[in-house]
Length: 638
View (cartoon, rainbow, N blue to C red):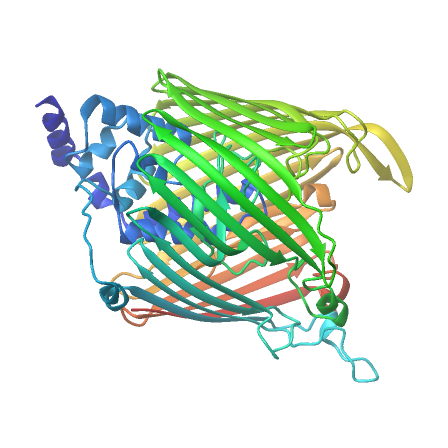
Protein backbone atom coordinates (compact mmCIF):
# COMPACT_ATOMS: atom_id res chain seq x y z
CA UNK A 1 0.00 0.00 0.00
CA UNK A 2 2.86 2.34 0.91
CA UNK A 3 4.47 1.70 -2.45
CA UNK A 4 1.22 2.45 -4.31
CA UNK A 5 0.79 5.74 -2.43
CA UNK A 6 4.35 6.73 -3.34
CA UNK A 7 3.68 6.08 -7.03
CA UNK A 8 0.35 7.96 -6.90
CA UNK A 9 2.13 10.96 -5.37
CA UNK A 10 4.59 11.06 -8.26
CA UNK A 11 1.77 10.78 -10.80
CA UNK A 12 -0.24 13.62 -9.29
CA UNK A 13 2.57 16.00 -8.31
CA UNK A 14 4.94 15.57 -11.19
CA UNK A 15 4.53 14.46 -14.77
CA UNK A 16 8.28 14.54 -15.15
CA UNK A 17 8.64 11.63 -17.53
CA UNK A 18 5.82 12.53 -19.86
CA UNK A 19 6.76 16.18 -19.68
CA UNK A 20 10.20 15.59 -21.15
CA UNK A 21 10.72 16.25 -24.81
CA UNK A 22 12.70 14.43 -27.45
CA UNK A 23 15.33 17.18 -27.44
CA UNK A 24 16.10 16.49 -23.75
CA UNK A 25 16.51 12.78 -24.38
CA UNK A 26 18.77 13.50 -27.35
CA UNK A 27 20.82 15.90 -25.24
CA UNK A 28 21.36 13.31 -22.50
CA UNK A 29 22.40 10.70 -25.05
CA UNK A 30 24.78 13.13 -26.77
CA UNK A 31 26.45 13.91 -23.44
CA UNK A 32 26.74 10.20 -22.65
CA UNK A 33 28.43 9.51 -25.99
CA UNK A 34 30.79 12.43 -25.52
CA UNK A 35 31.87 11.12 -22.13
CA UNK A 36 32.25 7.66 -23.64
CA UNK A 37 34.50 9.06 -26.38
CA UNK A 38 36.72 10.56 -23.70
CA UNK A 39 37.39 7.05 -22.41
CA UNK A 40 39.10 6.25 -25.70
CA UNK A 41 39.38 8.47 -28.77
CA UNK A 42 39.10 5.46 -31.11
CA UNK A 43 35.95 3.96 -29.60
CA UNK A 44 33.19 3.06 -32.05
CA UNK A 45 30.23 5.10 -30.84
CA UNK A 46 27.79 4.01 -33.54
CA UNK A 47 27.52 0.62 -31.81
CA UNK A 48 26.16 2.27 -28.66
CA UNK A 49 23.71 4.34 -30.69
CA UNK A 50 22.41 1.24 -32.47
CA UNK A 51 22.07 -0.70 -29.20
CA UNK A 52 20.00 2.10 -27.66
CA UNK A 53 17.76 2.19 -30.75
CA UNK A 54 17.20 -1.57 -30.39
CA UNK A 55 16.15 -1.08 -26.76
CA UNK A 56 13.80 1.78 -27.67
CA UNK A 57 12.09 -0.31 -30.34
CA UNK A 58 11.82 -3.34 -28.05
CA UNK A 59 11.87 -2.30 -24.34
CA UNK A 60 12.99 -4.95 -21.87
CA UNK A 61 10.97 -6.15 -18.91
CA UNK A 62 12.95 -4.78 -15.97
CA UNK A 63 14.14 -7.28 -13.35
CA UNK A 64 17.38 -8.09 -11.54
CA UNK A 65 18.70 -10.18 -14.45
CA UNK A 66 17.75 -7.83 -17.29
CA UNK A 67 19.50 -4.84 -15.64
CA UNK A 68 22.76 -6.08 -17.20
CA UNK A 69 21.30 -5.42 -20.65
CA UNK A 70 21.15 -1.69 -19.88
CA UNK A 71 24.69 -1.13 -21.15
CA UNK A 72 24.65 2.65 -20.61
CA UNK A 73 24.33 2.28 -16.81
CA UNK A 74 27.31 2.39 -14.49
CA UNK A 75 27.73 -0.36 -11.89
CA UNK A 76 26.45 1.84 -9.00
CA UNK A 77 23.33 2.64 -11.04
CA UNK A 78 22.76 -1.06 -11.74
CA UNK A 79 23.20 -1.87 -8.04
CA UNK A 80 20.73 0.91 -7.11
CA UNK A 81 18.05 -0.58 -9.39
CA UNK A 82 18.69 -4.11 -8.11
CA UNK A 83 18.45 -2.92 -4.50
CA UNK A 84 15.13 -1.17 -5.23
CA UNK A 85 13.75 -4.32 -6.84
CA UNK A 86 14.85 -6.43 -3.87
CA UNK A 87 13.17 -4.09 -1.38
CA UNK A 88 9.93 -3.36 -3.26
CA UNK A 89 9.62 -6.06 -5.90
CA UNK A 90 8.97 -5.50 -9.61
CA UNK A 91 7.89 -2.07 -10.81
CA UNK A 92 4.13 -1.59 -10.99
CA UNK A 93 4.33 1.80 -12.75
CA UNK A 94 6.88 3.55 -14.95
CA UNK A 95 6.60 6.52 -12.55
CA UNK A 96 8.33 4.43 -9.90
CA UNK A 97 11.66 5.00 -11.70
CA UNK A 98 11.75 8.47 -10.12
CA UNK A 99 11.83 6.99 -6.61
CA UNK A 100 15.00 4.91 -7.13
CA UNK A 101 17.84 6.30 -5.03
CA UNK A 102 20.96 6.98 -7.09
CA UNK A 103 19.16 7.48 -10.45
CA UNK A 104 19.31 11.02 -11.81
CA UNK A 105 16.25 12.72 -13.38
CA UNK A 106 18.04 12.79 -16.76
CA UNK A 107 18.63 9.05 -16.58
CA UNK A 108 14.97 8.46 -15.73
CA UNK A 109 14.10 9.92 -19.16
CA UNK A 110 16.22 7.29 -20.92
CA UNK A 111 15.04 4.41 -18.72
CA UNK A 112 11.39 5.29 -19.31
CA UNK A 113 11.99 4.78 -23.05
CA UNK A 114 13.79 1.43 -22.89
CA UNK A 115 12.19 -0.55 -20.03
CA UNK A 116 8.74 -2.03 -19.63
CA UNK A 117 6.74 -2.98 -16.54
CA UNK A 118 4.97 -5.73 -18.48
CA UNK A 119 6.25 -9.31 -18.12
CA UNK A 120 8.27 -10.60 -21.04
CA UNK A 121 6.06 -12.22 -23.65
CA UNK A 122 7.57 -15.29 -25.30
CA UNK A 123 5.83 -15.94 -28.60
CA UNK A 124 6.75 -18.26 -31.41
CA UNK A 125 6.11 -16.93 -34.90
CA UNK A 126 6.79 -18.58 -38.26
CA UNK A 127 10.10 -17.54 -39.81
CA UNK A 128 8.36 -16.01 -42.82
CA UNK A 129 6.52 -13.67 -40.43
CA UNK A 130 9.91 -12.53 -39.18
CA UNK A 131 10.79 -11.44 -42.70
CA UNK A 132 7.38 -9.86 -43.26
CA UNK A 133 7.23 -7.95 -39.94
CA UNK A 134 10.89 -6.99 -39.64
CA UNK A 135 12.12 -3.41 -39.78
CA UNK A 136 14.37 -2.27 -42.62
CA UNK A 137 16.65 0.72 -43.05
CA UNK A 138 18.78 2.01 -45.88
CA UNK A 139 21.01 5.07 -46.05
CA UNK A 140 23.25 6.63 -48.68
CA UNK A 141 25.85 9.20 -47.68
CA UNK A 142 28.50 11.32 -49.37
CA UNK A 143 31.15 13.70 -48.00
CA UNK A 144 33.71 15.98 -49.64
CA UNK A 145 35.73 19.12 -48.98
CA UNK A 146 35.34 22.24 -51.12
CA UNK A 147 39.12 22.78 -51.22
CA UNK A 148 41.43 20.30 -52.92
CA UNK A 149 44.14 18.75 -50.70
CA UNK A 150 47.68 18.39 -51.99
CA UNK A 151 47.33 14.66 -52.71
CA UNK A 152 44.55 15.26 -55.28
CA UNK A 153 46.36 17.86 -57.36
CA UNK A 154 47.98 16.81 -60.63
CA UNK A 155 51.66 17.43 -61.28
CA UNK A 156 53.18 18.46 -64.62
CA UNK A 157 52.92 14.88 -65.88
CA UNK A 158 49.18 14.79 -65.06
CA UNK A 159 49.68 12.36 -62.15
CA UNK A 160 48.13 12.49 -58.69
CA UNK A 161 49.41 11.04 -55.42
CA UNK A 162 45.96 9.63 -54.56
CA UNK A 163 44.36 7.29 -57.09
CA UNK A 164 40.72 8.27 -56.45
CA UNK A 165 38.65 11.43 -56.05
CA UNK A 166 38.15 13.37 -52.82
CA UNK A 167 34.65 12.15 -51.95
CA UNK A 168 33.82 9.64 -49.25
CA UNK A 169 30.75 7.55 -50.03
CA UNK A 170 28.83 5.12 -47.85
CA UNK A 171 25.84 2.84 -48.26
CA UNK A 172 24.19 0.79 -45.52
CA UNK A 173 21.28 -1.63 -45.41
CA UNK A 174 19.94 -3.11 -42.19
CA UNK A 175 17.17 -5.58 -41.36
CA UNK A 176 16.04 -6.44 -37.84
CA UNK A 177 13.24 -8.46 -36.30
CA UNK A 178 12.75 -7.48 -32.66
CA UNK A 179 16.04 -8.44 -31.01
CA UNK A 180 16.13 -11.90 -32.53
CA UNK A 181 17.37 -11.53 -36.11
CA UNK A 182 19.72 -8.99 -37.71
CA UNK A 183 21.14 -8.73 -41.18
CA UNK A 184 23.31 -5.90 -42.40
CA UNK A 185 25.42 -4.81 -45.35
CA UNK A 186 27.76 -1.81 -45.46
CA UNK A 187 29.93 -0.53 -48.33
CA UNK A 188 32.37 2.35 -47.91
CA UNK A 189 34.90 4.24 -50.05
CA UNK A 190 37.19 6.71 -48.31
CA UNK A 191 38.40 9.94 -49.88
CA UNK A 192 41.27 9.18 -52.25
CA UNK A 193 40.25 5.56 -52.90
CA UNK A 194 39.14 4.34 -56.33
CA UNK A 195 35.59 3.39 -57.24
CA UNK A 196 36.57 0.14 -59.02
CA UNK A 197 35.29 -2.08 -56.22
CA UNK A 198 34.18 -1.52 -52.60
CA UNK A 199 37.30 -0.88 -50.56
CA UNK A 200 35.46 -1.92 -47.42
CA UNK A 201 32.58 -4.37 -47.40
CA UNK A 202 30.97 -5.53 -44.17
CA UNK A 203 28.24 -8.18 -43.95
CA UNK A 204 26.69 -9.71 -40.85
CA UNK A 205 23.93 -12.18 -40.02
CA UNK A 206 23.05 -12.47 -36.33
CA UNK A 207 20.47 -14.64 -34.55
CA UNK A 208 19.46 -14.49 -30.90
CA UNK A 209 17.39 -17.50 -29.82
CA UNK A 210 15.40 -18.66 -26.80
CA UNK A 211 16.41 -22.32 -26.73
CA UNK A 212 19.76 -24.09 -26.70
CA UNK A 213 21.27 -21.73 -29.28
CA UNK A 214 21.32 -18.31 -27.66
CA UNK A 215 23.47 -16.50 -30.22
CA UNK A 216 24.72 -17.24 -33.72
CA UNK A 217 26.88 -14.80 -35.67
CA UNK A 218 28.10 -15.20 -39.25
CA UNK A 219 30.24 -12.61 -41.00
CA UNK A 220 31.37 -9.57 -39.03
CA UNK A 221 30.73 -9.49 -35.28
CA UNK A 222 32.09 -8.31 -31.92
CA UNK A 223 32.77 -10.26 -28.76
CA UNK A 224 34.06 -9.58 -25.25
CA UNK A 225 34.02 -11.66 -22.07
CA UNK A 226 34.69 -10.86 -18.44
CA UNK A 227 36.61 -7.63 -18.00
CA UNK A 228 38.22 -7.92 -21.44
CA UNK A 229 41.64 -8.90 -20.06
CA UNK A 230 41.82 -12.25 -21.90
CA UNK A 231 39.52 -11.67 -24.86
CA UNK A 232 37.75 -8.61 -26.30
CA UNK A 233 37.47 -7.20 -29.81
CA UNK A 234 36.06 -3.85 -28.70
CA UNK A 235 38.02 -0.65 -28.10
CA UNK A 236 40.07 -0.49 -24.89
CA UNK A 237 38.88 1.40 -21.85
CA UNK A 238 40.57 4.39 -20.27
CA UNK A 239 39.87 7.15 -17.78
CA UNK A 240 37.26 9.88 -18.12
CA UNK A 241 34.93 12.02 -16.05
CA UNK A 242 32.76 8.90 -15.75
CA UNK A 243 34.80 7.83 -12.75
CA UNK A 244 33.07 4.45 -12.44
CA UNK A 245 33.30 3.55 -16.13
CA UNK A 246 36.06 0.94 -15.83
CA UNK A 247 34.43 -1.90 -17.76
CA UNK A 248 33.34 -2.46 -21.33
CA UNK A 249 29.85 -1.45 -22.39
CA UNK A 250 29.53 -4.31 -24.89
CA UNK A 251 29.82 -7.81 -23.38
CA UNK A 252 29.15 -11.18 -25.05
CA UNK A 253 28.62 -11.76 -28.78
CA UNK A 254 27.09 -8.87 -30.73
CA UNK A 255 26.58 -8.06 -34.43
CA UNK A 256 29.06 -5.59 -35.93
CA UNK A 257 27.14 -2.71 -37.51
CA UNK A 258 29.76 -0.06 -38.14
CA UNK A 259 32.13 0.89 -40.97
CA UNK A 260 35.31 1.21 -38.93
CA UNK A 261 37.87 -1.10 -40.56
CA UNK A 262 39.34 -2.41 -37.31
CA UNK A 263 38.17 -3.52 -33.88
CA UNK A 264 35.88 -6.37 -34.97
CA UNK A 265 35.98 -10.09 -35.86
CA UNK A 266 35.24 -11.81 -39.17
CA UNK A 267 34.12 -15.43 -39.21
CA UNK A 268 31.54 -17.23 -37.10
CA UNK A 269 30.50 -17.53 -33.46
CA UNK A 270 27.90 -19.58 -31.60
CA UNK A 271 26.66 -19.31 -28.03
CA UNK A 272 24.86 -22.19 -26.30
CA UNK A 273 23.01 -22.10 -22.98
CA UNK A 274 21.53 -24.78 -20.75
CA UNK A 275 19.79 -23.34 -17.71
CA UNK A 276 22.44 -20.97 -16.28
CA UNK A 277 25.49 -22.41 -18.01
CA UNK A 278 26.77 -20.80 -21.22
CA UNK A 279 29.29 -22.05 -23.76
CA UNK A 280 30.62 -19.86 -26.59
CA UNK A 281 32.79 -20.83 -29.58
CA UNK A 282 34.42 -18.17 -31.79
CA UNK A 283 36.55 -18.30 -34.91
CA UNK A 284 37.89 -15.31 -36.84
CA UNK A 285 40.37 -14.60 -39.61
CA UNK A 286 40.67 -10.91 -40.47
CA UNK A 287 43.17 -9.12 -42.64
CA UNK A 288 45.10 -6.24 -41.06
CA UNK A 289 43.98 -3.08 -42.88
CA UNK A 290 46.30 -0.79 -40.93
CA UNK A 291 44.79 2.71 -41.01
CA UNK A 292 41.95 1.50 -43.27
CA UNK A 293 43.00 3.91 -46.04
CA UNK A 294 44.03 2.53 -49.44
CA UNK A 295 44.59 5.59 -51.61
CA UNK A 296 48.03 4.91 -53.09
CA UNK A 297 49.68 1.85 -54.70
CA UNK A 298 51.78 1.39 -51.57
CA UNK A 299 48.74 1.46 -49.27
CA UNK A 300 46.90 -0.99 -51.56
CA UNK A 301 49.91 -3.28 -51.55
CA UNK A 302 49.87 -3.37 -47.76
CA UNK A 303 46.17 -4.26 -47.57
CA UNK A 304 45.68 -7.66 -45.92
CA UNK A 305 49.46 -8.22 -45.96
CA UNK A 306 49.02 -9.66 -42.49
CA UNK A 307 46.13 -11.84 -41.40
CA UNK A 308 45.02 -12.13 -37.77
CA UNK A 309 43.59 -15.49 -36.74
CA UNK A 310 41.90 -16.03 -33.40
CA UNK A 311 39.72 -18.70 -31.84
CA UNK A 312 38.12 -18.59 -28.42
CA UNK A 313 36.16 -20.88 -26.11
CA UNK A 314 34.22 -19.29 -23.27
CA UNK A 315 32.42 -21.19 -20.50
CA UNK A 316 30.45 -19.34 -17.83
CA UNK A 317 28.01 -20.04 -15.04
CA UNK A 318 25.51 -17.52 -13.68
CA UNK A 319 24.31 -17.66 -10.10
CA UNK A 320 21.99 -15.49 -8.02
CA UNK A 321 24.52 -12.80 -7.11
CA UNK A 322 27.19 -13.03 -9.80
CA UNK A 323 28.88 -15.21 -12.38
CA UNK A 324 32.15 -17.05 -13.05
CA UNK A 325 33.80 -17.80 -16.40
CA UNK A 326 36.72 -19.55 -18.06
CA UNK A 327 38.31 -18.33 -21.32
CA UNK A 328 40.68 -20.06 -23.74
CA UNK A 329 42.15 -17.97 -26.56
CA UNK A 330 44.47 -19.01 -29.39
CA UNK A 331 45.69 -16.33 -31.78
CA UNK A 332 48.31 -15.94 -34.50
CA UNK A 333 49.46 -13.47 -37.13
CA UNK A 334 50.28 -14.91 -40.53
CA UNK A 335 51.94 -12.93 -43.38
CA UNK A 336 50.23 -13.16 -46.77
CA UNK A 337 51.27 -16.21 -48.84
CA UNK A 338 53.19 -17.64 -45.87
CA UNK A 339 52.75 -21.02 -44.22
CA UNK A 340 54.39 -19.86 -40.99
CA UNK A 341 51.87 -20.16 -38.20
CA UNK A 342 52.96 -19.70 -34.57
CA UNK A 343 49.92 -19.65 -32.27
CA UNK A 344 49.82 -17.83 -28.96
CA UNK A 345 47.67 -19.42 -26.27
CA UNK A 346 46.13 -17.58 -23.32
CA UNK A 347 43.94 -18.73 -20.47
CA UNK A 348 41.71 -16.62 -18.30
CA UNK A 349 39.30 -16.89 -15.39
CA UNK A 350 36.97 -14.17 -14.14
CA UNK A 351 34.63 -13.82 -11.19
CA UNK A 352 31.90 -11.29 -10.50
CA UNK A 353 30.07 -11.45 -7.20
CA UNK A 354 27.79 -9.16 -5.20
CA UNK A 355 28.23 -9.84 -1.49
CA UNK A 356 26.25 -7.78 1.04
CA UNK A 357 25.88 -4.92 -1.43
CA UNK A 358 29.62 -4.97 -2.26
CA UNK A 359 30.52 -5.79 -5.87
CA UNK A 360 33.72 -7.81 -6.48
CA UNK A 361 34.87 -8.00 -10.12
CA UNK A 362 38.13 -9.66 -11.16
CA UNK A 363 39.93 -11.41 -14.02
CA UNK A 364 43.19 -13.38 -14.09
CA UNK A 365 44.93 -14.12 -17.41
CA UNK A 366 47.94 -16.35 -18.11
CA UNK A 367 50.26 -16.21 -21.14
CA UNK A 368 53.35 -18.48 -21.16
CA UNK A 369 55.10 -17.71 -17.85
CA UNK A 370 53.53 -14.28 -17.34
CA UNK A 371 50.18 -13.26 -15.91
CA UNK A 372 47.83 -10.29 -15.91
CA UNK A 373 45.50 -9.42 -13.06
CA UNK A 374 42.62 -6.94 -12.83
CA UNK A 375 40.66 -6.59 -9.60
CA UNK A 376 38.05 -4.02 -8.65
CA UNK A 377 35.77 -3.58 -5.64
CA UNK A 378 32.74 -1.29 -5.61
CA UNK A 379 31.30 -0.38 -2.22
CA UNK A 380 28.21 1.84 -1.78
CA UNK A 381 28.87 3.44 1.62
CA UNK A 382 25.50 5.15 1.50
CA UNK A 383 22.70 5.72 -1.00
CA UNK A 384 24.51 8.99 -1.77
CA UNK A 385 28.16 7.82 -1.57
CA UNK A 386 29.86 5.18 -3.74
CA UNK A 387 33.51 4.11 -3.63
CA UNK A 388 35.55 2.04 -6.10
CA UNK A 389 39.11 0.73 -5.96
CA UNK A 390 40.80 -0.96 -8.94
CA UNK A 391 44.16 -2.74 -8.99
CA UNK A 392 45.85 -3.92 -12.16
CA UNK A 393 49.15 -5.73 -12.76
CA UNK A 394 49.97 -6.41 -16.41
CA UNK A 395 53.19 -8.25 -17.34
CA UNK A 396 55.70 -6.56 -19.64
CA UNK A 397 55.53 -9.41 -22.19
CA UNK A 398 51.79 -9.99 -21.91
CA UNK A 399 50.68 -7.88 -24.87
CA UNK A 400 47.41 -9.19 -26.28
CA UNK A 401 45.96 -7.82 -29.53
CA UNK A 402 42.60 -9.39 -28.69
CA UNK A 403 42.17 -7.77 -25.28
CA UNK A 404 40.73 -4.43 -24.23
CA UNK A 405 40.81 -4.18 -20.46
CA UNK A 406 40.99 -0.95 -18.49
CA UNK A 407 44.42 0.70 -18.63
CA UNK A 408 46.36 3.96 -18.39
CA UNK A 409 48.68 3.17 -21.27
CA UNK A 410 47.72 1.77 -24.68
CA UNK A 411 47.31 -1.99 -24.36
CA UNK A 412 47.00 -4.45 -21.49
CA UNK A 413 50.70 -4.98 -20.84
CA UNK A 414 53.60 -3.49 -18.88
CA UNK A 415 51.51 -1.62 -16.33
CA UNK A 416 50.81 -1.55 -12.62
CA UNK A 417 48.51 0.78 -10.78
CA UNK A 418 45.85 1.51 -8.18
CA UNK A 419 42.81 3.57 -9.16
CA UNK A 420 40.35 4.93 -6.58
CA UNK A 421 37.10 6.71 -7.32
CA UNK A 422 34.49 8.39 -5.15
CA UNK A 423 31.04 9.46 -6.32
CA UNK A 424 28.86 11.74 -4.18
CA UNK A 425 25.16 12.46 -4.75
CA UNK A 426 24.15 14.96 -2.05
CA UNK A 427 20.91 15.65 -3.91
CA UNK A 428 19.25 15.12 -7.26
CA UNK A 429 20.59 18.51 -8.27
CA UNK A 430 24.26 17.85 -7.44
CA UNK A 431 26.65 15.01 -8.36
CA UNK A 432 30.38 15.02 -7.65
CA UNK A 433 32.90 12.53 -9.01
CA UNK A 434 36.56 12.20 -7.99
CA UNK A 435 39.36 9.79 -8.88
CA UNK A 436 43.03 9.26 -8.09
CA UNK A 437 45.23 6.94 -10.13
CA UNK A 438 48.84 6.01 -9.29
CA UNK A 439 50.56 3.96 -11.99
CA UNK A 440 53.93 2.75 -13.26
CA UNK A 441 55.49 0.84 -16.17
CA UNK A 442 57.85 -1.89 -14.82
CA UNK A 443 59.72 -2.21 -18.14
CA UNK A 444 60.79 0.43 -20.66
CA UNK A 445 58.10 1.89 -22.93
CA UNK A 446 58.19 4.34 -25.79
CA UNK A 447 59.44 7.69 -24.42
CA UNK A 448 59.24 6.29 -20.88
CA UNK A 449 62.24 5.01 -18.98
CA UNK A 450 62.32 1.82 -16.90
CA UNK A 451 59.87 1.88 -14.00
CA UNK A 452 58.28 5.11 -15.22
CA UNK A 453 55.87 6.41 -12.61
CA UNK A 454 52.98 8.80 -12.68
CA UNK A 455 49.74 9.90 -11.06
CA UNK A 456 46.50 11.58 -12.07
CA UNK A 457 43.67 13.28 -10.22
CA UNK A 458 40.26 14.42 -11.48
CA UNK A 459 37.26 16.14 -9.89
CA UNK A 460 33.98 16.65 -11.72
CA UNK A 461 30.78 18.32 -10.48
CA UNK A 462 27.41 18.39 -12.22
CA UNK A 463 24.92 20.94 -10.92
CA UNK A 464 21.29 21.31 -11.94
CA UNK A 465 20.39 24.79 -10.73
CA UNK A 466 16.89 24.61 -12.22
CA UNK A 467 14.79 22.42 -14.47
CA UNK A 468 16.07 24.31 -17.50
CA UNK A 469 19.70 25.02 -16.53
CA UNK A 470 22.60 22.70 -15.62
CA UNK A 471 26.33 23.21 -15.10
CA UNK A 472 29.47 21.11 -15.17
CA UNK A 473 32.89 21.90 -13.67
CA UNK A 474 35.88 19.64 -14.26
CA UNK A 475 39.47 19.83 -13.00
CA UNK A 476 42.27 17.35 -13.67
CA UNK A 477 45.99 17.17 -12.97
CA UNK A 478 48.45 14.57 -14.28
CA UNK A 479 52.18 14.07 -13.88
CA UNK A 480 54.55 11.30 -15.02
CA UNK A 481 58.15 10.76 -15.97
CA UNK A 482 59.03 10.79 -19.63
CA UNK A 483 62.03 10.80 -21.97
CA UNK A 484 61.50 13.57 -24.51
CA UNK A 485 63.29 15.86 -26.92
CA UNK A 486 63.49 19.61 -26.53
CA UNK A 487 65.36 21.80 -29.03
CA UNK A 488 67.01 18.70 -30.49
CA UNK A 489 68.37 17.41 -27.15
CA UNK A 490 67.19 14.20 -25.43
CA UNK A 491 66.11 14.87 -21.86
CA UNK A 492 65.87 11.84 -19.57
CA UNK A 493 63.59 11.29 -16.59
CA UNK A 494 61.72 14.58 -16.96
CA UNK A 495 58.53 15.05 -14.97
CA UNK A 496 55.77 16.02 -17.37
CA UNK A 497 52.68 17.75 -16.01
CA UNK A 498 49.32 18.49 -17.55
CA UNK A 499 46.28 20.32 -16.15
CA UNK A 500 42.80 20.65 -17.58
CA UNK A 501 39.80 22.81 -16.69
CA UNK A 502 36.30 22.65 -18.15
CA UNK A 503 33.30 24.87 -17.49
CA UNK A 504 30.05 24.00 -19.23
CA UNK A 505 26.47 25.25 -19.13
CA UNK A 506 23.38 23.71 -20.76
CA UNK A 507 20.08 25.59 -20.97
CA UNK A 508 16.65 24.45 -22.14
CA UNK A 509 14.65 27.71 -22.40
CA UNK A 510 11.69 25.82 -23.86
CA UNK A 511 10.84 22.39 -25.20
CA UNK A 512 12.08 23.27 -28.69
CA UNK A 513 15.42 24.94 -27.95
CA UNK A 514 18.66 23.70 -26.39
CA UNK A 515 21.69 25.95 -25.75
CA UNK A 516 25.14 24.72 -24.77
CA UNK A 517 28.31 26.69 -23.94
CA UNK A 518 31.72 25.35 -22.94
CA UNK A 519 35.16 26.67 -22.01
CA UNK A 520 38.18 24.31 -22.01
CA UNK A 521 41.68 25.14 -20.79
CA UNK A 522 44.67 22.77 -21.15
CA UNK A 523 48.14 23.41 -19.75
CA UNK A 524 51.21 21.25 -20.49
CA UNK A 525 54.50 22.25 -18.88
CA UNK A 526 54.65 26.01 -19.65
CA UNK A 527 52.39 25.85 -22.72
CA UNK A 528 48.63 26.30 -22.73
CA UNK A 529 45.65 25.86 -25.01
CA UNK A 530 42.03 26.92 -24.71
CA UNK A 531 38.72 26.89 -26.54
CA UNK A 532 35.22 28.24 -26.22
CA UNK A 533 32.11 27.20 -28.10
CA UNK A 534 28.42 27.96 -28.10
CA UNK A 535 25.92 25.56 -29.66
CA UNK A 536 22.20 25.79 -30.30
CA UNK A 537 19.72 23.06 -31.32
CA UNK A 538 16.25 24.09 -32.44
CA UNK A 539 13.31 21.86 -33.24
CA UNK A 540 11.00 24.05 -35.31
CA UNK A 541 7.53 23.88 -33.68
CA UNK A 542 4.95 21.87 -35.60
CA UNK A 543 7.49 21.28 -38.32
CA UNK A 544 9.76 18.49 -39.53
CA UNK A 545 12.85 20.70 -39.44
CA UNK A 546 15.66 20.43 -36.87
CA UNK A 547 18.72 22.73 -36.83
CA UNK A 548 21.96 22.54 -34.86
CA UNK A 549 24.70 25.17 -35.12
CA UNK A 550 28.02 25.66 -33.33
CA UNK A 551 30.83 28.20 -33.31
CA UNK A 552 34.14 27.25 -31.65
CA UNK A 553 37.24 29.40 -31.19
CA UNK A 554 40.51 27.74 -30.17
CA UNK A 555 44.21 28.39 -29.57
CA UNK A 556 46.83 25.69 -28.95
CA UNK A 557 50.49 25.90 -30.00
CA UNK A 558 51.55 22.39 -28.90
CA UNK A 559 50.16 18.94 -29.65
CA UNK A 560 50.03 18.20 -25.91
CA UNK A 561 47.54 21.06 -25.42
CA UNK A 562 45.45 20.10 -28.46
CA UNK A 563 41.71 20.75 -28.10
CA UNK A 564 39.16 17.94 -28.55
CA UNK A 565 35.44 18.61 -28.99
CA UNK A 566 32.76 16.15 -30.07
CA UNK A 567 30.26 17.41 -32.65
CA UNK A 568 26.73 16.37 -33.51
CA UNK A 569 26.80 14.59 -36.82
CA UNK A 570 24.78 12.52 -39.27
CA UNK A 571 23.03 9.40 -37.94
CA UNK A 572 25.45 6.58 -36.99
CA UNK A 573 28.39 8.95 -37.38
CA UNK A 574 30.25 10.85 -34.69
CA UNK A 575 32.83 13.57 -35.24
CA UNK A 576 35.47 14.12 -32.57
CA UNK A 577 37.20 17.33 -33.66
CA UNK A 578 40.91 17.83 -32.96
CA UNK A 579 42.21 21.41 -33.12
CA UNK A 580 45.70 22.89 -32.99
CA UNK A 581 47.04 26.38 -33.72
CA UNK A 582 44.78 29.43 -33.59
CA UNK A 583 41.45 29.53 -35.38
CA UNK A 584 37.77 28.71 -35.38
CA UNK A 585 35.46 25.86 -36.34
CA UNK A 586 31.78 26.28 -37.11
CA UNK A 587 29.14 23.94 -38.48
CA UNK A 588 25.45 23.73 -39.31
CA UNK A 589 23.53 20.45 -39.18
CA UNK A 590 20.09 20.31 -40.81
CA UNK A 591 17.59 17.48 -40.55
CA UNK A 592 14.36 17.49 -42.51
CA UNK A 593 11.76 14.77 -42.06
CA UNK A 594 10.06 14.34 -45.42
CA UNK A 595 7.69 11.66 -44.15
CA UNK A 596 7.55 8.80 -41.67
CA UNK A 597 9.80 6.88 -44.08
CA UNK A 598 12.29 9.48 -45.35
CA UNK A 599 14.78 11.77 -43.62
CA UNK A 600 17.46 13.92 -45.21
CA UNK A 601 20.50 15.39 -43.43
CA UNK A 602 22.97 18.06 -44.46
CA UNK A 603 26.05 19.19 -42.54
CA UNK A 604 28.35 22.07 -43.49
CA UNK A 605 31.54 22.61 -41.51
CA UNK A 606 34.12 25.37 -41.86
CA UNK A 607 37.59 25.41 -40.28
CA UNK A 608 39.67 28.60 -40.45
CA UNK A 609 43.27 28.89 -39.15
CA UNK A 610 43.73 32.51 -38.08
CA UNK A 611 47.48 32.03 -37.53
CA UNK A 612 48.03 31.38 -41.24
CA UNK A 613 48.86 27.69 -40.85
CA UNK A 614 47.40 25.24 -43.37
CA UNK A 615 44.79 22.67 -42.31
CA UNK A 616 45.87 19.07 -42.68
CA UNK A 617 49.36 17.65 -43.02
CA UNK A 618 51.40 15.78 -45.62
CA UNK A 619 49.38 14.93 -48.73
CA UNK A 620 46.15 16.02 -46.98
CA UNK A 621 47.37 19.60 -46.57
CA UNK A 622 45.25 22.45 -47.95
CA UNK A 623 47.01 25.27 -49.80
CA UNK A 624 44.97 27.97 -48.05
CA UNK A 625 44.24 28.55 -44.38
CA UNK A 626 40.59 27.38 -44.43
CA UNK A 627 38.64 24.28 -45.40
CA UNK A 628 34.90 23.72 -45.88
CA UNK A 629 33.38 20.24 -45.60
CA UNK A 630 30.00 19.02 -46.84
CA UNK A 631 28.13 15.87 -45.73
CA UNK A 632 24.78 14.72 -47.14
CA UNK A 633 22.69 11.70 -46.19
CA UNK A 634 19.36 10.20 -47.24
CA UNK A 635 17.85 7.78 -44.71
CA UNK A 636 14.84 5.55 -45.31
CA UNK A 637 13.12 3.31 -42.74
CA UNK A 638 10.17 1.02 -43.38
